[in-house]
Image 1 (cartoon, rainbow, N blue to C red):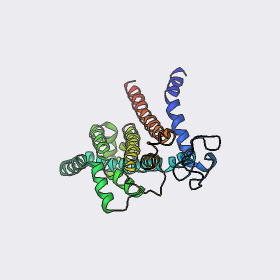
Image 2 (image 1 turned 90 degrees about the vertical axis):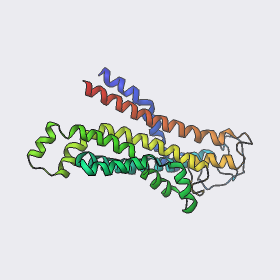
Image 3 (image 1 turned 60 degrees about the vertical axis):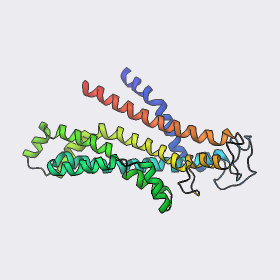
Image 4 (image 1 turned 45 degrees about the vertical axis):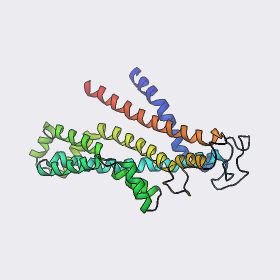
Length: 273
């Protein structure tokens, strides 16, 4: 009972922060006092009517902060799912098939590894329409290489273990062995990689939005910081405009990464036991 309480305490703060952000993203209309398109007087200071003031267009900053959680989390999570999905497939096939296929898949992985993500997205945004879809696809397609390497190493480790050899002796297909025998063993390494890729995607989204490489009609934490910078929020010392979304990004990334580290550490303890 005591170890369970200690584990719960370790996860409590991170889980609470993630839960708050998920609620903000899921039901923003029940939390935000105003809609994201409602207009009031511009550049208002915090008051009882607008606890974080208003931006240059008179929009309530707190309402924007709540509604922005959806896009920021969506880009991070979907990019993470896409990246880890590609990484798992490439790592499984590379470790299981071996030989020339291993060389091909690992050569492709090394090629993706050396590609500069942010400059490539900047170049793509110059020729394509910038927006969430471009960020999700690009970040997902360029963030799977580390997951593929970790999965490959784990597959090489377990492919000669008894339970896999037994499945082969019984005549099960490679697809069955990979999906039913090997894939469940990979979850302790897949989960931390997924959450770390998600956190990296959130940082990348904020960075690119700050550079103006996102759809200005969409609302995200990165777009809010960019708007504050480009519309005199910093010059007017309106810290209540740019600081809240900055803190949300920092706290969100820290909460997600801490969950990954705690999960990985707990997995290692169970393996040692």
